[in-house]
Image 1 (cartoon, helix red, strand yellow):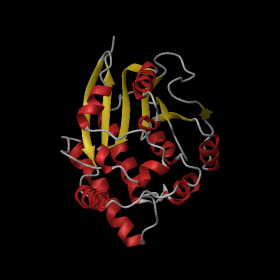
Image 2 (cartoon, rainbow, N blue to C red):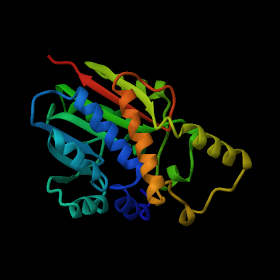
Image 3 (tube, one colour):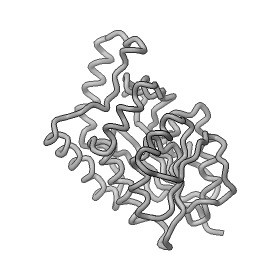
Length: 250
C-alpha cells in the first residue's frame, strides 16, 4: 500500500464503520459455518494493522501474516504476539496447517491472484474454510484503489472462477456493502463521466476518513445488519464481495 495510508488505517480500523462492519459480517458467518471443534487454528493472511486478529481470536489460535514490516509493527502495537512476515504466493507453512484461512481484501493486491488463492488453499485443512473478501466492479475504480495499490476489482462470476479449486464447495458467495452501493455507484460514475483528472500520487485520497460519531455509528449499524441476510442468502450487488469456501474432507 501507499506509505501514507498505514497510519490512517491503524487509527481508523477499530472504529470506522467499514472495518467494523466487515469484521462483524465475517465473525457472524464464521459462527455459522466454521468447524465446530475448538480451538481452531486460524491464519489471517494480509493481517495489515491487526484489528481482525482479535475478532478471529474468538474461534481459536490466530497467526497474523503480512509482507509489510510497517503493517506488522502496527499489529505488534496492538499486542498480538503471533506475527510473521510472509508474502503470497509463498507461505511458510506445511500443507493443511489451518482450520480457517482468511484473506480479507488481500488477493486484489497480488499480481498472480490465481497462485495466491492456490497457496491459501494449500494450507487449509480438509473440512476447513477459506474466507476471501475483495472489492467489487472494475468500473468503481477510484483513488482509493490507487492509494491501496490494487491490481483489480472483481465481479461475482470472476471471483467464482478464481476460486475453482480441487475439493472446494462454495458455502456462501455474495456481494456485500449493498445498502451503500447505489449512492457510491452514482458518485463514482459521475466522477468518471466528468472526466476529472487523476490526482498526482502525493495527492491521492483514501475512502477511509473520519465521520461524525453518530453518522459513523449509523453507517456501522447498516453495514453490520447485512450479516443477518448473509446467514441465509446472497445479496445481488454491492461494493465488495465475500466468499466462504469449504475444503472436502478426505
